Structures are given as C-alpha cells and as structure tokens.
Image 1: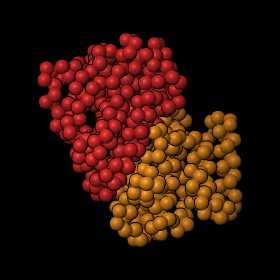
Image 2: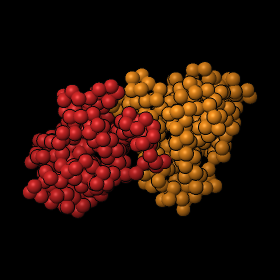
Image 3: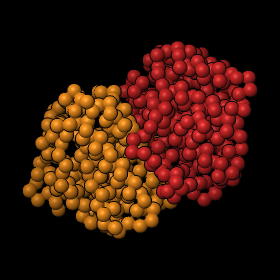
Image 4: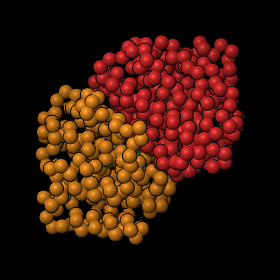
Length: 240
Length: 230
C-alpha cells in the first residue's frame, strides 16, 4: 500500500508535527518517536502466548517493545475504526457482520498487547476517521486499506522480532489480519476486483513506510505524550 | 484439521501400509529429534498447506538447499509437500471443468499461487527437494461441493502448518519467505470460507488469533485424508 492508496489525509497535520515525526522515524529517533507519539495505525503483532506484563520494564528487548507498541498503535486505530463504524449504524448485510466480527478481534488484539506491555504500553491516540465510517462504501474501501496495511506491517516486522514467543504471537495475528483483508475484499469484489488474494507472495512494509502511510491518512489527530509508565524503550537499530 | 477426516480414510489408500509405517516413523523422529528431515526426504510425502518461501526464493535460491541448516531443509520440504498437494488439487479441479462462478475464479487464482509456491520452494531447495508424490483426491476435484469443502480444509491446514514452523526456522531469508506465504494461505482460507458461508458459517476469520499446528499434527491430518498415494 503506497501512501497514495490511502483515502485522503494530510490535511490534518497542520503544524507538520506528524510529518516531522515521521521524517525521523528511519533513524535512531524512531523509538523516541514512538514513545512520544504513542501513535499510528495498525496491524497487530503479538502475544497470544505471552503472560501479562511480560514486556514491561525490562522484560524484553527494547526492539521487541518498540515493535509491540508499533503493533498496539495500529490495533488501536483499527479497533477505534470498527467501533465507530458500528456505532454509526450505516452498515448492513455481510458488511455489518464483517464489522461485528472484526471489531471484536481488533479489540482483543489491543487488550492482549496492552496486557503484555504492561506499563510500557503506549496510550491510545485520538482519531478522526473523516466520515469514512458513515457510509457502507467508504467503510469498505477504508477497511481494505487498513487490513492490507496491517498484514504488511506485521510481515515487515517478522525478521526484526527477537523473542520467539513474540514471533509466534505476531504470526497468529498476521494470519488473522490477512483473513480480514481477504474477507472484506471478497465482500466488495466477489472474487474479482479487488481480488481477495492479489499476489502469490505477500508484500510487506517497513515500520517507517507504515508510519508514513498512517500519517498520510490523517486519521490520528492527537497523540499521547508518553506511555503509562514512561518506560517504553526501544532498540534504535530496529529497522522496519 | 479434524474435518479432513470426514469421508477420507487412510486405510482405503494405504494398502501396503507404507503411509502408516511412515507416520509411525514421524512420531519416533519427533521424539528423537532430528531424523524428520531424512524421513521426509525418503518418503517425499504428505499434504498440504504451504509454508515458506514466498518472495524469498530470490534470497535463498543461491543456496540450493546446500547452504541451509538441515532443519530448515526439512521444514522447506514439509512445506513443499503441502504445496505439491494443494497445487495438484487445484490443477485437477480447474481441469475438471466442473467449477463455475466464484468457485471457478477462486480455483484458477489459487492454482496459480500454489504453483508459484511449488516453483519457489523447488528453486530454493535445489537437489535437496523431495519428489512430488502421487495423489488421489477421491472425487473431490470434480464435484463443486466436495471441492469447496476440501479446499477449505486444505487452506486452513496450510495456515496452521506455516504458523507452526515460524519459530523453528533458523535462516532469516527462509523466515521471510515463509512469512510471505503464510498470509496468502490465510487469504485463500478466508476467501473459500466466504464463498461457502457468505460471512456466516463458516466465518472467514473464526478467531482473534489463528491457531498453529506442529509438523506431526499436520502430517497426521494429511495422512488421514488418504490423498497421498505414495
């Protein structure tokens, strides 16, 4: 998913804060960026098998904590998107069913990630989905972009994760995000266009590419200043 | 993959007991540790869900199997066997000419993907690749209903198989390859589930976290289908 595939953004970042932040993501400031902003979209990542608080305060490598918070931010975004769409009441038929099921999954991913990260978890940002949750068609198109991005985000981190338990959990979420993406694509295109499985090998996105894409959506309007415990730390060398 | 047992029994096909013997050996190998690779190499058998190599053949191809740890070669051959099974299944289903509409579109697209997975795995493994087994799909490729039900089982199994090997892979390039195939199998699974249930039953994404299966569990499930003749 290139930035241009995302439904209109940019207009929200009036003071350029998000853009400035994104520009620093590639280097050693990415972790600090994530700590400060606690933001950005989503695809989940990890933890089904991890005990609560396992990654808080020194329980894991800084790189894994950064990846988990990256995933948590994406899951916050997805979860909020589906919750808002359901509350607007504009969805019907299978699209409504899809939203019901997926909303529960994303919420579970958020809860699990927060539990694993404990005090190192970033806080939830504030969102503005710009009306995309108010109609069936804009909801569908946005959902396709979010789910496809989620798949690419998780896959992009597979080679960066250090703890096996985190990798295992990330793989279990990766598969679910892919199922979501395929499902909404089939609802929209009935197997033709967009195809539920458009390629033989799934493409991925680096963390910075995902953050830039999220920034491009303008869906995130404000970011918490720090994690609950202020202890989020990450490996500066984490490469998307 | 308990659903795969429906109507399919190993005994129907495994007349000389070769598969049962192999399955027993797999269990022993699992217990002892590292003979699984040679076992798979010897039998060249078992089903499918693919696991690895997606975009990766490029990164790993030069190794031609020789530069990879034995355990990775075993995992790749496990994946190759599953992909052989899936690929042949779809190829025959498309050739049967009995599928129509969305089911035909699904079969055509997925047949192309599975064939690409087989090719990628073959090029990665080089001379270490297991040979393609003979298959008997017991009429499931020429009957739309049976095809739809079987495709769902195969794809769900493929996802659990790749997921179960993620933490066993040692080579980063192989992990990325497997990682790029895993979500494609998941997309296939959700797609056929949506065709079968239109979002209700079976649900395209039944759980918040996708379950995983060990190599032994997958091999046992494949054995139970009786699809592999030897």
